[in-house]
Structure formats: structure tokens, C-alpha cells
Image (cartoon, rainbow, N blue to C red; front, side, top):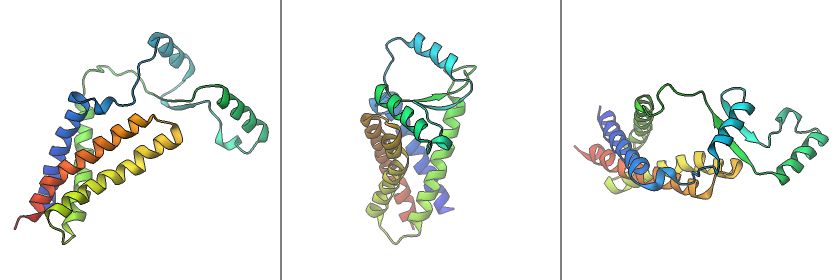
Amino acid sequence: MRVVVAALLGAIVMFFWQFASHMLLPIGEMGFRAPQNEDVVIQAIAGGTPQSGIYALPYIDMARFEDEAVQKAWVEKAKANRFAFVVVSEPQADPASMGPQLGKQFVANLLGALIIAFVLAATPWGFGARVLGSLGFGIFGWLLNIVPQWNWYRFPSDFMLGGLLDQGIGWLLAGIPIAWWLGRR
């Protein structure tokens, strides 16, 4: 029960940090840009993406990657054009309503905090080391999630920095109540 309470406290802190990071500070928008002509881009996406999914442009079918002619054509196209990584989904009934996303985010934070609290509870560490351990988990998640997006899909460096700030500061702050609760006798 001690681990569950610590995780709940950490998840609440992380949830409020993410609110501040994304709604009050510019951290959540780092790397995002507005297209020059949004309507043209929206029209192109609607006409060129037949279903929801992730589209990387220029595209190459990995099943045909070993075909020299296909690979050469893709390389030439990639050299001559900008790269795009586009997530396409169906329109939402009410895009301003964030209730379902907020619920899912809190559950994700709680599950992450449960893992962190469980591992930290198994250590003989004191308060400070446990807080730093929580920070370590945040950086670990960033290294395995955000950095590959920067490396492979060319996400902008400021997006990568924003992810580090969001995860690092968030799990550092969440680590404070987790470490405090786990340290209580």
C-alpha cells in the first residue's frame, strides 16, 4: 500500500507539472511550427492520406529497400525534398474537449509512477537519492522515446529539448512526494 500511495502522489504532481509545462509555459510547444498556408496543407493531407496513420515522406517501402533501383529513386527524392513525419487521424467530434486525453494521461502517469515507486521502494536509498532516481527514470524515458524521434524521424532539436525538460523536471518533482512517502516510517 505504501508504494501505491507514493505512486498516486507522484502521479498527481506529474499531472500538474504537465499542465503547467503544456498550458502555462512554452515547453509543451517547443519545436511546433505553423505552416505558411494551413488550408493548402490540410487539403493535401486530406487528398494524399487515405487513412489514419503515420506517414513519412519521402516514403520507401521497406520490403523493397534492397531493390537498388527503388532505393536509388528514394535517395534522389529524399535529397531533393524536405522530410515530413505526419500523424494523421480522423477528425474529433469536439477537438476542444480534452477529457478523454486527460484521463489517459493521468493513467499513464500513474502507471509510470507505480514502476518508479516500486523500484525506489526496493532500494536502501534515502530521500535525495530516491528523488534523483526518479529523475533518472524521466531521463531514461526521454532517451528511449524522444531522442530516437529526433535521430530517425528528424524531430527538431527544440522539440527534443522540450521533451527533456518536460520529463526531467516532471519526474524530478514527482520524485519528491514519492521519496518522501517511501521514507516515512
